[in-house]
Image 1 (cartoon, rainbow, N blue to C red):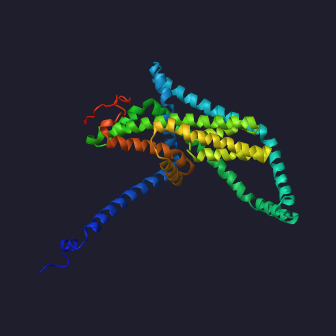
Image 2 (cartoon, rainbow, N blue to C red):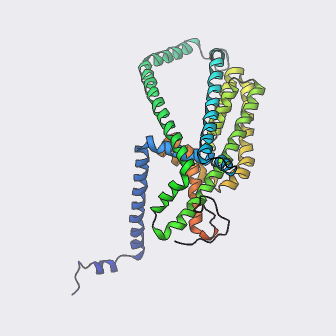
Image 3 (cartoon, rainbow, N blue to C red):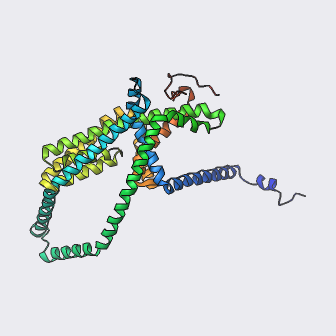
Length: 376
């Protein structure tokens, strides 16, 4: 007589579809737990992981210049220092220029903002809405009370901002030092990382990661061109319309455009707001048209020609990647999302089609296309 507790007999009555679904379920739960653990570690060690991620992007950005100097027989240490010096001079020069312009134009901008608020109040009172003076006075009183009540909170925010500046400077120092070592001994560091991979998969992993790195370098180079064109378009429109802080808008647009889609939208909104405060609705609408024109030029011309050759990512993948990155690490996650996706897509494509891989060889340079991979 068969035992009712026999597991074999129980499996006989389990539908095959349920067994397959259960197998997929526990495997997916393990993968989700692993992904959640990685995300937790990244956020817990954010003081290290964020500068490391920024250093990887800076290394990808400076790699073409570094290789150009190497081909001209410049010493490796000297070429690395030149790359970092160029980076510091560009960033420092831009920040100095922006700070000087903001300091010089802040008083007039403040006066324009006050005049704009007064015009708005006058329009609410005399315009089609016919808001009476008592309601306006009540709103003004409520706003003043809210600002007075928030004085303590504002002081706390200022104090935390001071601490954040310290963390930012420390993270910037870590990022610059890490970039220095990545440029100087990147192949040696990568060889050590690859040595941790099991032997049979080592060659394929090296070449797949090489494909990912080539895609990342191409993406960063193309993205710089796209950001520069966006910022130049906004700068020209701001200068023609005499919008205040044109060079500040240039810097903001250039930096914000590194976050695809959302960055240009935010920078454009700031430009339109400044035009509204300084010159009114007509100038703001013209500035809005200029921003839309620049964004259309980016999405329909620059993105397909430049970024389309660098990485093949669907716009939906861009949006989902930015959303996921912002959830994991906020603004830095949104900035890193598309480079991570670009690297991952090229890495996965190379693993699926190793015969088409053109990743980095043992000398750190990309071999000729069509090179047959040999396992060690």
